[in-house]
Image (tube, rainbow, N blue to C red):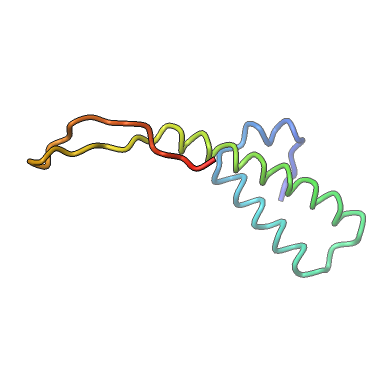
Length: 84
């Protein structure tokens, strides 16, 4: 896993950030990482988690709920009700 700087995390697509986060979780669960590296990897994982959450919130905000009329045709769209 080629680690990038924290500023690079902001440029990562969701899928890449999630894949790296999953790899970090796997490493930490194995318990084979030295303490200092564990701390560094955990901090990167937190940054990746925050980035993924922000990308998901952004995607949710763009999703619209389509209203259907009695005949099944689309009447219009409204923002999706997103829980805070």
